Length: 239
Image 1 (cartoon, rainbow, N blue to C red):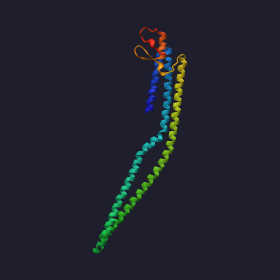
Image 2 (image 1 turned 90 degrees about the vertical axis):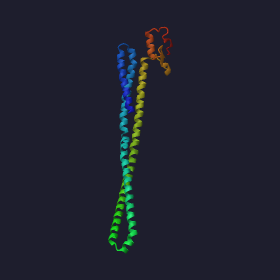
Image 3 (image 1 turned 135 degrees about the horizontal axis):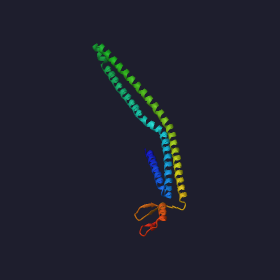
Image 4 (image 1 turned 180 degrees about the vertical axis):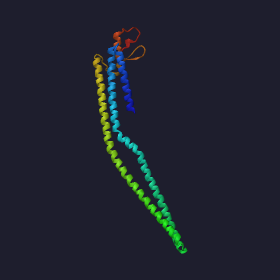
């Protein structure tokens, strides 16, 4: 989002600057030239940054897909917890039935209650079978989960490593091209104003009588066209 917003702002500024240069050109061609240089640089930089955004969008696709998969990973671990809970509950019931059978087995035989004893033995065997089945399902879930974690981990290492290389190289290339764009704009500006020397940033501005900040090249241009009057502050032009 921040990259798209930057591209939008730069493109809009470049377009508006181009329109302003055309509006100014009919009355002051010299004043419009820096605007044209700046407009061209902004538009070129915006197009290059937009292309960088497309490249980054494709490069971060593996990260986005793995982020969406996190929901299913959480569900898989939830299935593992459910299987373990089911296994524990089934084993607890089976152990309880087996303990009850062992406690009452002798007394049931002495009392001749073989039908009840047989029923208890059948229930204990069924509970033990359920517990064994629950344990087997829990082990299957554990094996699937372990294999999937290993597979996804290896996939992330490979995809993320290649994606990070693409992102780094793309940003490096884009930064180099944007730097070249602005350096060419600076050279064009110097060609338009060969006599202008700006050794330091603070020397590039003047303060007029109304405390407005005005570019030095504009002040020089105005100074040639308008004779400064006394008390206007033009005597404070810093070149």
